[in-house]
Amino acid sequence: MPNYRRAFVPGGCWFFTVNLLERRKSLLVDCVDALREAVNATRKARPFIIDAVVVLPDHIHAVWTLPPGDADFSTRWRLIKMRFARAQPKTERLSKVRAARSERAIWQRRFWEHLIRDEADYARHVEYCYINPVKHGLVTRVQDWPHSSFHRDVRAGIFPEDWAGDIETQGEFGERS
Image (tube, rainbow, N blue to C red; front, top):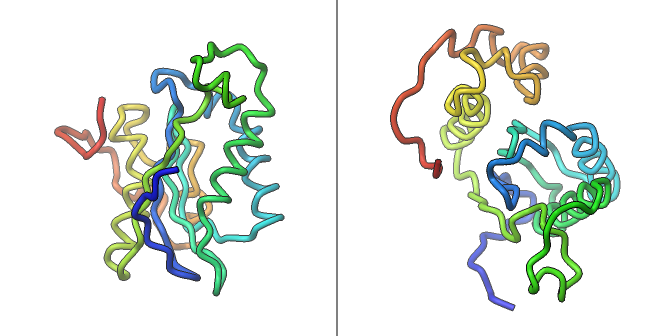
C-alpha cells in the first residue's frame, strides 16, 4: 500500500475534499439523509467536531477538528464512505479491480486534506466551504444552498444571513470542471 504524505497532528484541524467516483452524479444531495446518518454514526463511534461542511451533488468540503490525542481522520472518512455506500442500492458498474476487492463504485478511493495552519487559514477554508455552491453555479446566494453548516453558523451569530451577498463568480477556483 502506498505511503501517502499526510500530516498527522493529534487534535488538529483539517480541511477535506471528498469526491464521488462519477463526478457528474448528484448522489450526495439526492441521498443527503443517508450521508447525514453515516456521519452521525461515525461521530458517535469516533467523535470529531464539524467546524464547517458543505455537501454538493458530487463532492463534500469539510473542516474538522479531532479530539486531543487523535489524528485518525482517515478511518473516519473510511467509515462515512462505507456506511453511505451500504445505504445505496447496488446499481453501479464495477471495474474488475473494484469487483476483485469487493469495493463499491461510489467514492473516489482517496480524499484531499489540508492541515489548517492558523486562524486566517481556518477562516479562508470555512469561507471556501460556504461559497462553494455559488462557485459551482448551484445558487447565487450562499444562504440559498440547503446542504451547508452555514445555516448553523448564521443561527449561532457567526455569519450574517446575507454573507457574500448576491454575487457572480468567475474564473478558476482550484477545482477541475
